Length: 277
Length: 267
Image (cartoon, rainbow over the protein chains, first blue to last red):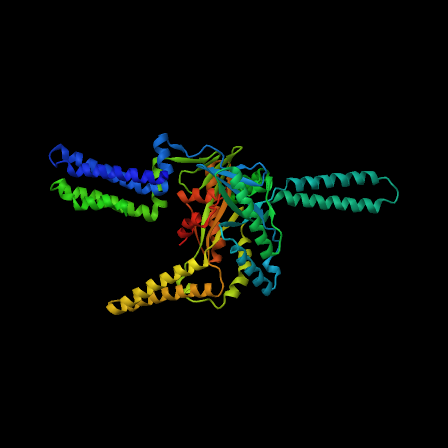
């Protein structure tokens, strides 16, 4: 039997026993006080029984651990499957595998005609209703990690500077040198604007879960569901969804990937500036 | 209902507590009944307040914990605190809108893309808009609506026969009937009945937990303003539901029956 039901019935039974005791004890002298205390305890257990409907885990751990900081679980919230395609979580004896797939939509309503907007709206409506089993569609706005982009600009500047050095002193190269110097100026400007503000990106993706008594069973189940969902998305939207793996998958899950570490100081400075203003 | 049985027994057997104490017993039982009823409706307000007053803090998983006011999930990474918060984004249960098929539905669908994009213009922090959806069985959905319609018709007939009901009560019943009929008409016209849970997630960062949660509260307030044009009810998720929606990132309900309780919560 489910532990939640066992707990509810146990607490309710205890409440009834205490209540019966409170009723049968004769109301004389000190026993009256005992009767009221038993009644009070009975009501407390009754309330706990009702609260156990949603809070049984909290109540059990609270009683077990007797401290202010209660550990409901000290294990990782999930782990990557061996293939890196799915994440695995375990609840009791059940394994739950979840797969994420990106929906690469690069269109904007402001650039569409009213008819195109209507068609697109209907496509999205159909997308949400293609699945018989629960699927979660997400649109995520996240801070771009511009490290690689900034690095590539630095490389570009260095390489152009080298070209300028090579050309300098060569007869008839003034025009080319001026062009390259202009290019360096442009990259420096881009670098300054890229570093001074954060950039955001919008991505859409879908997630689906499958469960099983073993990891393999859960993974196989979710792979089947993901295949069906991807083909549904593909036929509805006319695009090819891609399975999120490795880093891309983690970026959809972990909060620190929504705000990359390298952009944090920039954000904190901005926050302080806003507060000061 | 089972949980109110001890209280009912006390009301019936209050005489066994003796003359002046029977009133005390009834008051105790009454308070317990009120608390049980309150837990049934607003447990998300009562339980976090109890946990907060006891100074309890819960660790959900490695690296993740719920803050004391139970309105944010906290993750500490390399000395930085990331606070994750959620907002429900339920579609308003407009009775007046739902009772008739909307004639300008195509216009609304066409405008939705632009409304969404306009909402995003002022947002300069990370967030996620989630839609958890599942198809309902067409026949079951139709049977359910027919059952509801029959019950409302029965109630209306009884009201008319008794001649005690006011015009406003009868009008309310008619609206309910029209609403159910409109839903049945939509299904008859080929629309698929679906169930959805919609919610918004956002994350803020800070050098202390307080800085992160303060930032999060600011972001949630801005999201409530920015997304208000979407005709959704944006309420901050607190208490046990915070844990539920947080877990959705790692595991979703995999069958309609497992998810149905969440759909029901959306009303």
